[in-house]
Image (cartoon, rainbow, N blue to C red; front, side, top):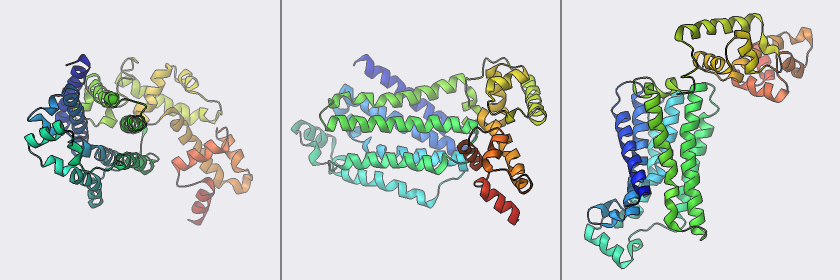
Length: 368
């Protein structure tokens, strides 16, 4: 057995251990923990399946029953990602419509069932005779359907929750990493199928797909050991941004003091009105380093630097819009007066911190 297979097998063990940890964790969001545990376990199972196949063990009696069992999983990962992200963002549980997500894996299992129903001896004989695929009614175009389904789930997740205004800085960072790892897997999977189908790559190089699985399991394990709050009752969104601020030197007391100081500066000095305001400028005002200032904003307000600044700008813009009958300023002028450099960024921020564009806000406020 090569060292590469041994390395992948070690990550399989780590993945199983992590999934068990999440499945049986009693604190935090139980439903989200179970979803993450199942997702991690299925990734580990696929890794195990491939390790057994690369080593040839899967073709031996007993293990032969695991052959092709990872096929249905390809249409399960995306559904778990979607439901998990929906839980983190909207706090919703299972819906009856979620049962529709079971249709693709059910169809896949049905197409493979003639092979699954064979005995150990039957499967080994089919392998030796070279007619295994006589028992698998999976059409040639079926793999492209599977890839389309995987990308569909990624798109559904993105447009369903990515623009949600309730997603804070920490949640956003976690979801970007989590969904990004799934997208990486789908992309590598699709790339492999494309290269193999067109004769550009040898099918034996399929292990490069599992590099993404190893990355996911490895990063999850790293975060668990470096930032143990992930496993100690706090939700992952509370533990993020993980290790970024562990060495900034800010105690809890000083951090709270600097938060109050920052709020005073924002209210009194109004630095956000400066169109060229940068994080370094704000750090200079409160006499902290750039990283420490970023920590204050991220941890206490759950916002990025630009969102933190823009929420003040939009608040002022709303007041100016309501006074515009007297001042007769254009929307572009108002945007510049509150600190924006252009109308596009102003409209984008206004939509994020309000219920529509500036014109809709004025109409709705005047009507009420």
